[in-house]
Length: 315
Image (cartoon, rainbow, N blue to C red; front, top):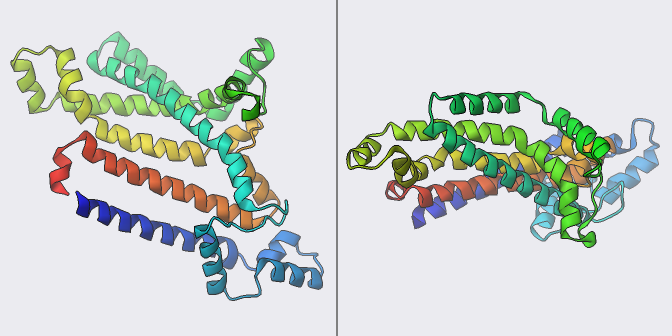
């Protein structure tokens, strides 16, 4: 197990290094002059030179890369050209919106998907199973931004139970802040819950067909008892994979929902930074999101061994 941890840790470091190189090349080297991209083609030459000196663009690409990576390792992401604010502070302020939103949506998705998937698998071929699969197909097909606008129309404009957008802030209290995140979280959770339900059902049905389940049934366990005592835990490995991917998507891919609800999160920050050609902000946020994705996948991989003890001996 220790050797496996060391091997996965080395893989984690290599993945982060490769990601940092790709992000740096894509945003600073491949497109051309970042200063020209920020200021536009009509910028005066002396203004371009001043900006290049301010951003350190007058140095070589390897020197700029080492400076950028070294700064990130120390928590220094640089200064935003557009906002003249430390990028680390901007990310920290918006992370307190995007991270709770992702966790909220993931919790809702899990609370919906686990009972629905188990229920459908335990009643395979019944009207309940067909109904759950039909609803999940609908949930996958409906775009989350359209569902988000529909919820704003119903719950914010007609029923006036929630605000149409904006974030109350954690200073206003826990419940007002969570209420501001409820509609966005539901909009994000719906398609994820549909996918997770289908994976949960398929994994359980496959596990229920294994020999050890038939042996348990032969010893007198009912189908429900065999499902809860033996099948459920062994069916969790693909479900954990999907959960890890979903959390990474919810954290990094909520840009549309954040803009629909005017939430000051990381997605909106990246959108505005791209529009303003603020490359420092874009590469820092993208690197942070890549880091989150890689770390979550690393944690999910480690969780496999906790869920299925058979995997510990193989590693």
